[in-house]
Length: 117
Image (tube, rainbow, N blue to C red):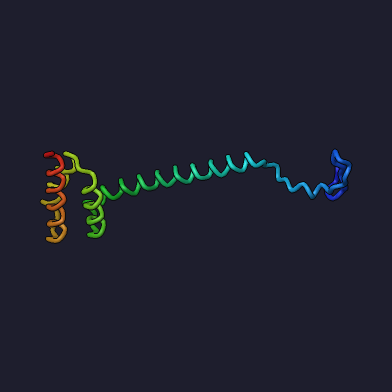
């Protein structure tokens, strides 16, 4: 076994030190593959977290916090469906704040217009 720092002869006979071969065991292809794997892993984690956040936003429609209810209305406005129209009708009957009730009515009209097309 050779010690680091000891001269090593290359094919051309010139002396080089083992430390001149700065090599950490991962080649250029390995670094690229690791970078790609890291990127894809980051994207995957981001998509999962975003999906969970969106799901929480929909659940926030009947939250005790008005800001969460407003966020849930924004989420639902981007996803028109029959289920969301029914949910909005229930929400309009439940909501006590006039501002949020009006916003829900606007979103319901948008959803119904989309479904009528």
